[in-house]
Length: 415
Image (tube, rainbow, N blue to C red; front, top):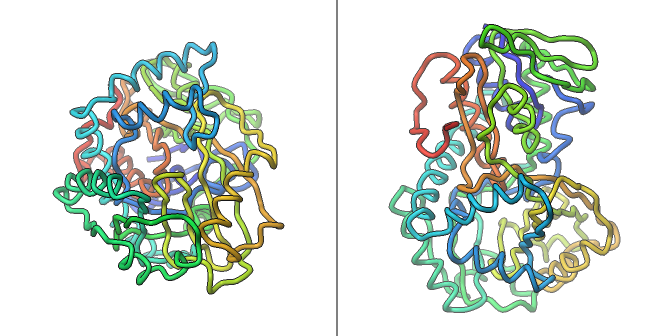
């Protein structure tokens, strides 16, 4: 079977690899000039099943409401006259209950843990390098009350099979001495020893190169115009370089997936952009830099050491498709980084970036078949695209190949 994949980010390339392993002919199409030029370019660098709790929850709802009148919130909801945002927001509100959060967390955790196992298989079979470190991630808390709430929330992930340890301050500093230099308070942390870090962009590009040597065709610098439908199926995709046709098609275009789905009558795809900001800093004093990835759950400062660089993210905005940014957008992140890891990074040489995370109200992607027999979805992974990529690719490849996926797709189907 000839499968056309629309999108060459970490999701699309991971799907191409899995379809190739199943013996399919694969073509990947993207308007960029190389893989991972979009959301996969500079994400937080965390592969984190230990952080698979649902975004939509009573606690997160309070954070969004505060963001309407407090501009310094790390997660901001920016209302605007946008029918798509209004529709998405209403669906998000319906997920902000304790019961729904528990269901969505279970679904996210199942995919994340499966995907991490598949990632290891991919690395073992291809030898791709991406600066991966399998030494765990710390989820820091500044108050005892916050740590206790996190420990309670962790029980569901632990029951699902995720290893999580609750550490006090002294235990945290023993496994991550770099935190002793900082001024931020630490009450303790939830430690996920099996979580890991790595450069998603490097992984995507090395895996794409490997796939290309094995016969996958990549058509870059090719703008996808529309899906061509006929006789109840997708017959081709129209591009600015001519039509491309195959037997099956996979939409892996992140936040742009719903627009193409609507062209063929698939109007129930609740994916909306969550704009994430990141910066990458060269290390100045490696001994002061963290060895483990981490998240400060108070400020939502996220860090990952990528060889001789420090990747930092913190700020998320929900409110449109703009990817523009200015140096002042990163001032808070720079200050938080210096406070937490003083002297570790060269703050005078940052590489700034902003990208759009494709977020669903539930936090789970939409995977697999659609009402159109030869059109499949692999989109909507939110802030966990790097974590979910390999498993999502395997799930979609299984569906296309006519096999039942290894995990349940509850909460992840197009409905």
